[in-house]
Length: 213
Image 1 (cartoon, rainbow, N blue to C red):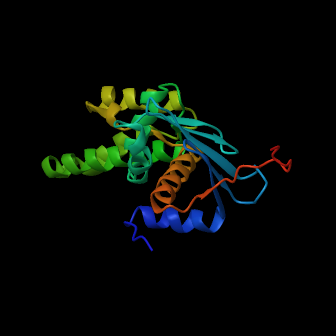
Image 2: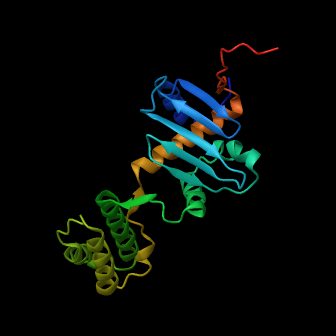
């Protein structure tokens, strides 16, 4: 049995339990199903001669354009364990594909990181005014819920203007969507299963008619 790295193993363990039916439809098409003869909770992967990987089915579609030749696509995706790297290749195929979305949780996490960084630098040089500095930062933030992305960026501008902070635009308030993370897992699973030779080739249906002599 193949030994997976620390990133790949949890993916393979999770999806091995879900997807039991793996079929190679033809040279460039694979079908992954959780239930035989059902396209619910299933997906299809196709590869093209111009080196695209296309996933479709019950988990929506995604297209990937990695480097390399068509024969190496399963090998590439099996090792594409960093989701940011995977997203980069998705955008090479379709720059409009939605990979990330704004989340209030990430926005609040960013503000807390900015606060700790700012207070850490300030405390080293102005320890006597530390409590006043905390209050000033909290006053700027206020009770902003950050439910909407424009609220986050407005607050970022206020922090830069009121406190003289710089480069706060580097704090990204978006996260990879649940769907995109799942699509990534599915393709990592597919790539590894192709390399392992796990897919069963689909049998062609033959006619029952007797051959004329």
